Image (tube, rainbow, N blue to C red; front, side, top):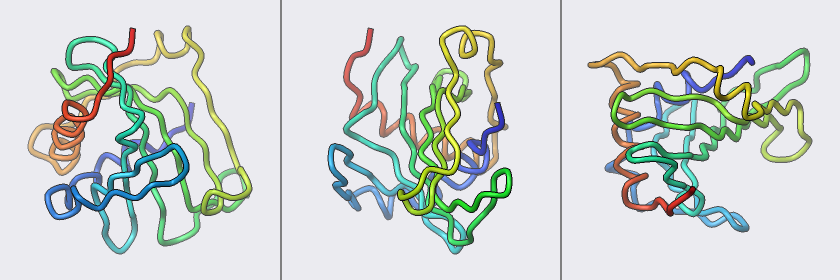
Length: 150
């Protein structure tokens, strides 16, 4: 499954402290902006963070791209990603991805079923990188907002 989560995690939390109170309500979503730069505006949905196991969370990300990209020839500038984040090891798996034009017309939808998700390797973030800082900040937010899953 082709996924852009690494890009999202790489810039996710550069603005976590400055943006932690920038909560936007969008229907049933409570988006907390965690990063923003000239290329990305990234938020997590604090209303839908679920604890799976100890320090393992299901997290929804919304990434708005400043520049429109293409997937199989179709333009998109927003991604909604559901990821499983393991805060003990700073690693993640991707469960779902939706790509659209600012939340309008759906360009692509990717889903991992339980078998795919179980077979998907954990992707580790490199310590000392911006991606690691992003994962840590997401874990901090997940600990504050998570509801119990299973």
